[in-house]
Length: 104
Image (cartoon, rainbow, N blue to C red; front, side):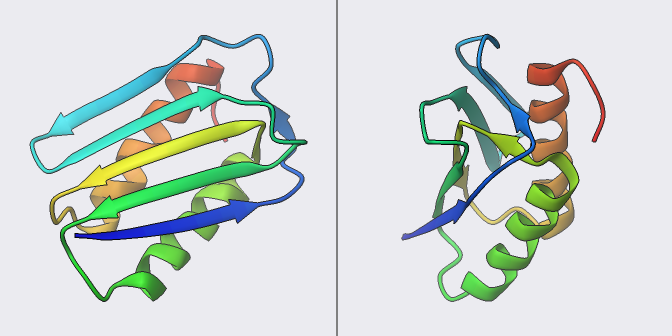
């Protein structure tokens, strides 16, 4: 298992006042949890993955997600057992849409 940490400063969509926790499990190999957190406008993402050595790919997927959604004051936890980048993006979008009630 590998744990990766990402932090994006100054999101444009604050989660203050949103639901306490949103989770998406649409397939057996990936879980996405998003919760509001006081992070000074930042978005923190922790990825726990069984696919060791794909840090650059995860960085690209997380950067793309943050550019689309711009979540602020959000903590995201991803538990991965080998999902493809496309599935990760889909599940992140589903969780963010459920939490915000909107689209990117």
